[in-house]
Length: 132
Picture 1 (cartoon, rainbow, N blue to C red):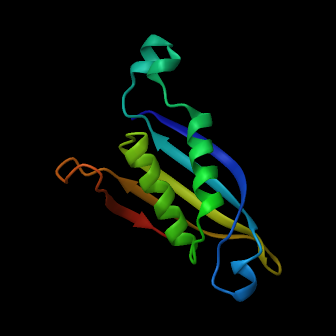
Picture 2 (picture 1 turned 30 degrees about the horizontal axis):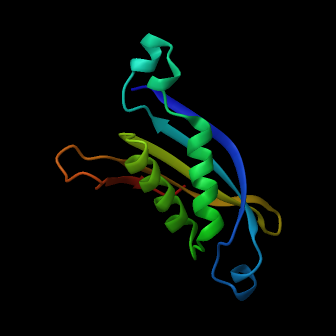
């Protein structure tokens, strides 16, 4: 399996359950590992056969600029499903962290993995693990 990664993507978004979090965007950090749907780009060296990193980042930014999530777990799940469905990745690992959310803690977050289950209807996925 060939995997691309995006590390330390920082985005301001609304996330959390406390009253102040409903109106004050927080910086979160995303780390993604995304399985390529095929290995064709490795052989052809053709951009049209590859996943477009910048398009993935753009879609995540667009989504997080419009939607509030109460939990990091739900935010991670939403990103995982977006990549699995829109970019046809068979597997993804998403780590999401709030930065400096707790005094004395640099990051607090969640890490999930999802994969497309070949035996399940298109667009569905299987939870393979969660939590860190």
